[in-house]
Length: 325
Image (cartoon, rainbow, N blue to C red; front, side):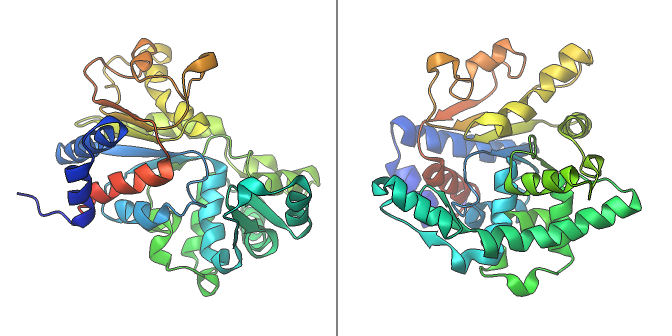
């Protein structure tokens, strides 16, 4: 019998019905995927890095329970923002009560609000901009090109940020990913603060747009990675939130089948989505998993789970179960 910690035992004992039961079922099936030798992709939408998901996700990466990540540009950068500027963040528990004038006051004081948490522009965004600019400039001068996440890996692994850490580095999921050198897919990276920084330098003709590799190149990379990692086993899909972080990578399978006509490539071996989105008005993020069967992404027999709840609550509990905490 597997020895589990108090968190795992609690959810198994008390989470018996509805979304709670789906959470337990999804966690058990996640672990079964790993036991079968399958790999797992985790996708991050929303503001999971600012929600400090790294406190559990980083250990999942270190223990080889996550093998590839797809995330928004915001989640990529905000984990590093938190790493170097945590002490300067401002939490606003009563954010629902803020007036427009109070919101403007936060802006005037260079705080950008994400629900109940304000990210400090100078200590977080502008501080990281300097390091990224140097990495972009060096690559630009040398005629080199890298993916967005690779530039972050460079500044993390160089040690140049170490003295600026304001949290325990073991709680940074991006640092854990860099140390394991797992692939990260960042579709639509331009839609991020650092993406905006890069665009501004390109507009000023200081950098070339081609220095940072594109989303099409990310899809090409993912197609190759998926084929290589499904030769003997499967790859599961654990989706936190919706949007491009989930929509982009799951499409690699129908692309391989329908566009490249590679019929021997298996579909995703597991699917779980944590979301509060609904299917009203054609919401793809709220679509039930069976709809993905019609698009050639999942098989009828694929283990499928939807947990309609807050990912900041659900994801750490599932990770705790898989980590046997």
